[in-house]
Amino acid sequence: MKIAILSRDATLYSCRRLHEAALARGHQVDIIDPLSCYMNINPASAAVHYRGEPLPHFDAVIPRIGPATTFYGTAVLRQFEMCGSYPLNESVAITRARDKLRSLQLLARQGIDMPVTGFAHSPDDTHDLIEMVGGAPLVVKLVEGTQGIGVVLAETRQAAESVIDAFRGLNAHILVQEFIKEAQGRDIRCLVIGNEVVAAIEREAKEGDFRSNLHRGGRARRVVITPREREMAVRAAATLGLDVAGVDILRARRGPLVMEVNASPGLEGIEKTTGLNIAAMMIDWIEQHARPGFSLKTGG
Image 1: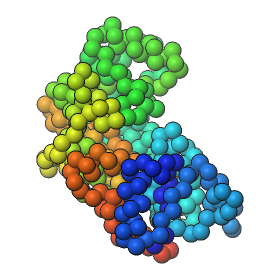
Image 2 (image 1 turned 30 degrees about the vertical axis):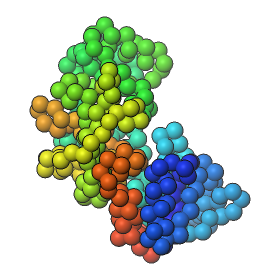
Image 3 (image 1 turned 60 degrees about the horizontal axis):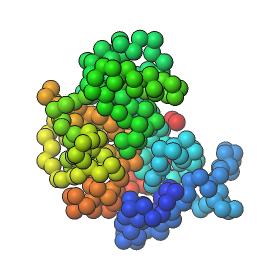
Image 4 (image 1 turned 135 degrees about the vertical axis):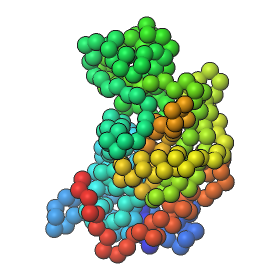
């Protein structure tokens, strides 16, 4: 099978592991920088060109598209889909997940529990926005933030108003979210492939921080999740249409709450913590689902 990995950096852990896993199964693998691709959208001769030449047909494409390149990266992925390549996560599903507001609205529509969340651009009444999510302490997030960047814990009403006003001055869209104090800086990362949680870790924020992202110095350990958490993670990924997802869950007094669904979850933390070969599981999913004559049933 010919497989393309869309990645801007072939040296990243996740990209290397997927490349190794595919080669170990006997597949031919190319790592392609999506920003160096350009496209012929003519219906009679649709193609993706790369560094001066049209690319051959790929049976499957693994998108490892960073948040900063979502727009163009998903456009390139759509072109591969048009040309009949099977995507490990469809372009439309990735754009759903990357839009934090849209993803939360879709999850809420399906009745999936999450922290109380408000959304605003230039709120006329900051006081009412704060009250909407239960008052301080609360979390303020930039919609475009990732890996804990653009996330602030406001412990008092005055601090919350100051942060919201500052973000408003940046002409930014913001999410204001209930702070789940009892989580104590911990969350559960569930790695979902298809309709199964194949691995789960508990991430804990470093001392003095409340963000559990491993990129920000958080620690991780293996964890046993409950049947409710397992079902919630699978439902969240399915709601956004993702074959592979990292679903982040907070353990609150009222039960588990989905905090975020990641369409391009990093493999380093979860593989090293659990000892599981997640990359091989992802290749296995491709082998089961990529077929000659593949075509998408969903629109984009």
